[in-house]
Amino acid sequence: MDLITPELGLVFWTLVTFLILLFILRKFAWKPILGAVSDREEGIKDALASAEKARQEMENLTADNERILQEARAEREAMLKDARDVKNKMIADAKDEALAQASKMIEQAQLAIESEKKAAMAELKSHVAGLSLDIAEKVVRDELSNKDKQLKLVEDMLGEATLN
Image 1 (cartoon, rainbow, N blue to C red):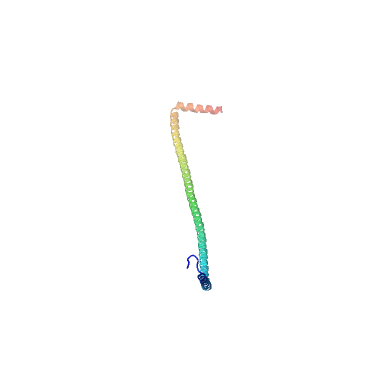
Image 2: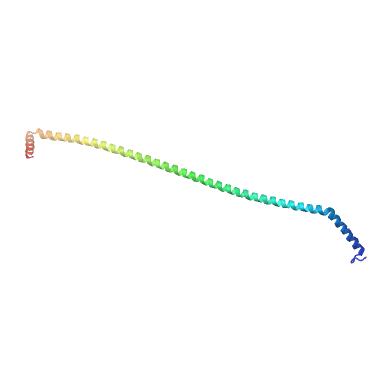
């Protein structure tokens, strides 16, 4: 027996055994192996589809979250703007009210000053009139106390009356 060239009988029986083994495998094992491979392939496809679906859902959720965040930011900005507007309006209203009250107080003070001024002027006029009467009375008394002066005053008045 030579190791390099096998004998013809050995080759024949090896070929027959191989064909029988191939027939048995094809008859009994090939379909279950192909079925298992097919099932495995379907499982992998389903897992990939599920993973893709989950990825798509995650993208949708991320987009929804981003949209909700944008809406919340916009709402927050609107609320802050409204609060600023209300604050500014309250400040402006308070300023306007303070100015109105200040103007009213100034006007009342001016009216009071004017009233006091008129009262002081009336009192001053009354006092000046009283002083003038006192002075006139003293002058007239002084003038009328002297008989010569009285006669001269009457003559002067008569002279003026005749000229007119």
